[in-house]
Image 1 (tube, rainbow, N blue to C red):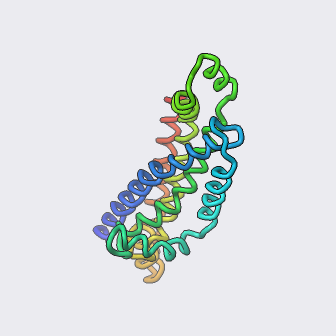
Image 2: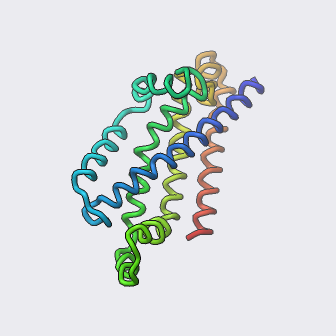
Image 3: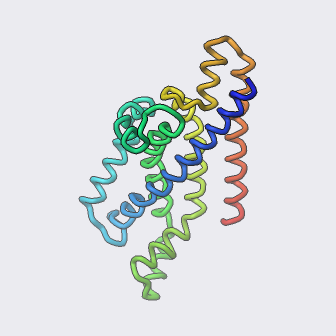
Length: 211
């Protein structure tokens, strides 16, 4: 079982970290659009804000196990297959994009209005305010959001075993629960707990450094 657990551990890390990178990059774009088009944003646009906000809420409402099935055609188009660790990254990323987009939007909109007004008084353009005020001031809050995202994806990765993900959660179910190997179940659970603790501790450390 050692080789199987080590392979599953690596696949879990690969799946979660890759999905995190893609979801952060893709989720940042709608977050910026929401901040710009919000009623109190730099370029208010009620229609764009309401439509995009509605779409984000819709995708956030889907349970992950259902979303995996819905995006199978997209997974096949991108990866070429709907089975395997790499294929599982697609539904993980799709489920994480609306979550992190909302987190980033909230983080940026919590920026002190006084700082924004001060930037305007010095003649800063909208794009300068966006990048040098909104984004710069909200980096610590965004970091907390990324930490929460990673922890959530670790939990979702267990369900990704349903599409042949081969991750720790899948090993725990197939070899631990179904074959009554409670020692395997305990080891897999411990690995996931350690993952979460490391991510949270590292996130707290970085947050203190950049705050």
